Picture 1 (cartoon, rainbow, N blue to C red):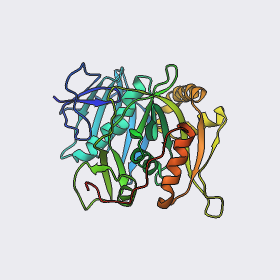
Picture 2 (picture 1 turned 180 degrees about the vertical axis):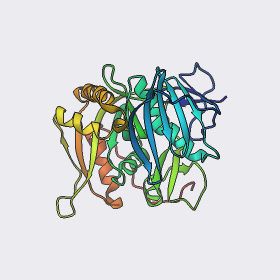
Picture 3 (picture 1 turned 45 degrees about the horizontal axis):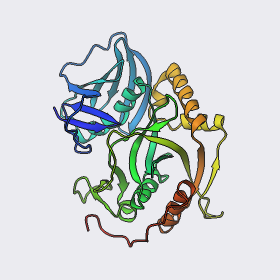
Picture 4 (picture 1 turned 30 degrees about the vertical axis):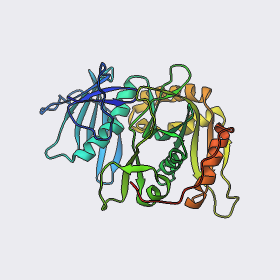
Length: 324
């Protein structure tokens, strides 16, 4: 079975993951295996459910030996109590792209939860040794903002899942080294990236940077979390941030967790406590940004100035096609 770098560790997997960098050696942190017969669902305690797509949902249940994550379309995943072992029972003729997305998304979020790591729904970059996270609902620009910063010299840490350790000063674990962007966003903010696969028929592109300079096992200290909000069209148009009080920040982050709605009362209480530890060490800001591609360089320059004020800015480039 191949080994891959993921979340600062090594995944030994029965499935191939072209999204991940292969690991040449090392003791696995996680094992992903497959079985044809589903484990018993007798005695399960349903913790919660969530919508994956309008046509598919997912449920999380407590079992005697761990947790079970059941998707309508991609099968059942049993996650051990220590989070290290993931066993997949597939449905008939699964969509393997969807299977990989679910594993690298909610299934790993459950595994990391078992290991005491909190997972937030967003994107994160490394600005010269400082991790900056961007959280928001869909269509608010978190991936676009992160990609624009990578194109300006940052390093991509995470897209979709921002995994944050909570034992001491919080750190961000390196996630999947790709980012999913709408076609128009990719053309403007990922000029030095290449698509993971060539497919002109898709509305979104999964891209990666040839020179991301990311150390697969390195974790990065969390410097700030930004909750993105679009600027009102009739107000001032420069990016502005406002730091949230710790209690308000903690509650706001709870609504941005990857699996918080599925964890049940006890699980959500545990996550709320973890988030309190995060906000005690890292500031959380409400960041208003202009929804204007033409002002992305201004936005990235502002964010760099907040965290690395002495760093020289890179020259502006004209939009280009991927791979050119």
